[in-house]
Amino acid sequence: MAKAEDGTNPEVHIWRIAPTRRDLFGFLGWGAVLTSIGIGSIAFVRFMYPRVLFEPPSRFKLGRPATYGVNQVSDKWIKALRFWLVRFDDRFVALSALCTHLGCTPRYLGTEDKFKCPCHGSGFRGYKAGWAVLGTNYEGPAPRPLERFKLVLADDGQLEVDKSLTFRIDKGDAIKPNAFLPFA
Ligand code: FES
Image: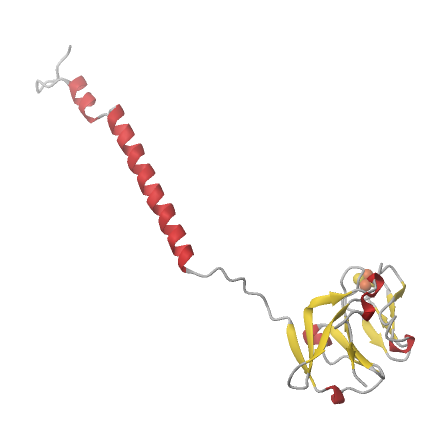
């Protein structure tokens, strides 16, 4: 075997710095230990924080019933909450302003007493047709009536809408509790 000029054997030198199989298993072992510690730490940190789903509020106070005229469609909440508050002789209805075709916002046309969608022309019945069929689709591509939101009278005497609960009159929901608010 050839020796270097300084008298050392280069092959022996290479053999000393190359990792052995034992070194390799050592690295793998430490890697596994550190990975376990890392995963455990992440799990611990997650455990320390509550798993709360933050959702936007769905209930909104709408003021006193007397502030809304009888037999009128109020668009006071269209921009902020996207629904009409419709008052009949004996009840209130919170009617969704989400077109059931592709989700545009219809407009209430008072002279024609109908809700007309500007996107593809769907039309929905206005208040003169009666509370039972208010929002029923009758022209254009909309496949079903506008939905209604839960409406109650809160403890403080204000109307309160809950947009997380909807009612569909095509499924017979028009007479369900909270699909309207009786008020004479
Ligand atoms: S989105 Fe209203 S008619 Fe198409």
